[in-house]
Amino acid sequence: MVKVISTDPHESVVKRVICKHCGSTLEYVPVDIQEQTLTSYDGSSDISKFIVCPTCSNRLWVTNND
Image (cartoon, rainbow, N blue to C red; front, side, top):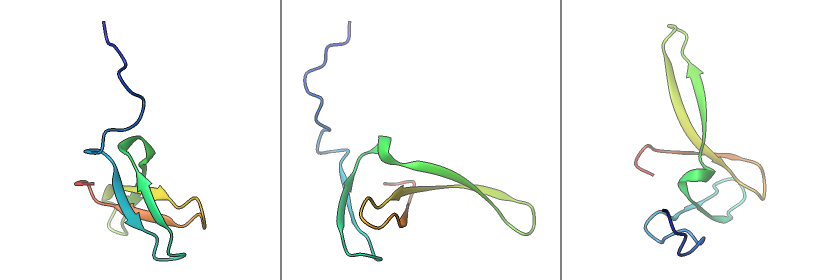
């Protein structure tokens, strides 16, 4: 059986980023990341990942390594 030791995210999965629109420093974990499928003019598509700044609602694009 799975046992919950802590509901706080472990420091190894917490990332930080600065919003270039409003300057807020943001912390996020993998569950905060949203995905959007973007389609090019040539018809190819790619899935991009982003978080939304809670201060200004700006989208901050994150890489797959984040």
